[in-house]
Amino acid sequence: MKRLLTYARLSWPDILRHKSYSIFVVLGSAIAFAFITVLMQIYYTVAFDRPPFSNAGRIVKIESFHGRDGKDVRALRDSEMQDFAGCFPDVESCAMLSQQLSNTYVGDAIHPLMLYFTNPGFWDVFDFRFLDGRPFSEADMRDRAQVAVVEKNLAQELFGSADVTGRGFQYLGRTFTVVGVVDSFIEFPDNGSALGNIWIPQIFNEKLSNDTPSALYLLFSRDLDAREIRNEVSTCSVSYFNGRDIMVDCPTESVRTLHDQRGDGWFFTWGIWGILFILVLVPSVNIISLSSANAYNRLHETGVCRALGASSSSSFANLMTEHSILVITGVIIGILLVYPLTSALNAVLDAGVFRISLFSGIDAMVIVIFVLPVFVLFSLLSGGLPAWRISRKNIADSLKGNIVS
Image 1 (cartoon, rainbow, N blue to C red):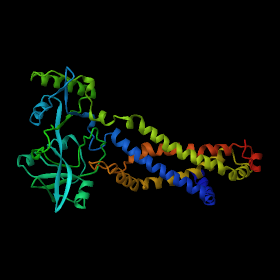
Image 2 (tube, one colour):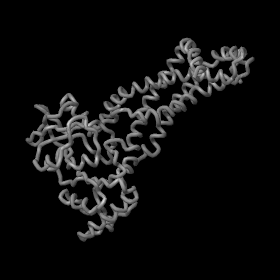
Image 3 (tube, rainbow, N blue to C red):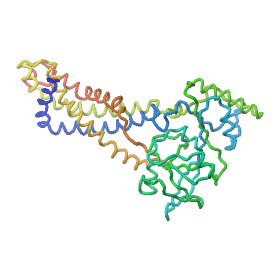
């Protein structure tokens, strides 16, 4: 540690003397790591099932079935879904979710919104982080209470503040009172299906434009593994429809948990790693090129140090310490840039018609698991190669400033 502090103290004058190079390394590292942090946070949220998807490995989404002839079977009606869910012995809770594009009024302002209608089981299946208030309950449903839960970003957009518990909006002539506010979350909905950002009890679903059935989410017991969940869904679904003289085809391999579905697609299979490779490689190559061009100025200095008794390894360590200080500074700035960057990305992408946040926060584990290892790799690639080349050159050639091997 004492030697490392000595290297750091000796590096500071060199950093100030080569200002252009230092600024380039810091800015290049900052920009690269801002994007890397956002990318890894998104991956971490999906791959490790962060709220509200902590139970994704135990959730199966039911929407449609196919008959043995390959044709679609009539979808379950909303009135049948509780009965269907009761056929599964290991289901802990179920959520019904449908959506309707409707005009809502906040004060005198009209807002066309996608409203999401669900049952109280929705809050058991998905573990949303409540920032304020509570979810609506079975008691609210029995009393036909006109209540709603709103996601933080939408609350900010509609009311100008996330502190909206107790405030109301109008839908179909009814005034609904916000009883809870949940934190923003990342979901990457597939086929236009999303959990939503404003929820009201399903009993108020008028289904104005069509009679599209709700999606059904089944939450299975923690005692079951993925294979047992698939088997139970396949067996019980076929049994349910057989009891109604409907032959369905529901092979085990076609049943997928929400965790499986969320990881589908090119982005999470190989695209995210390709993007990460580019984010690490391109800045590294640019910094290597600049470091090599800057090598001539350091050859004589390194040669003098070695002529006075410094070893190749100590020369390498000194150069790497200087480079690591620059990269660490860039990483810290890059992490601080994450929130402005994601705000800009959300503005460009408009976060889709569902207005779901692209990014809601940084998990400390993202820094530990992803950012720090990438920092080490980035430092070795961008600074290690030029430092190793300079520290290993012949002392006589270094004193002459001969950069050619």
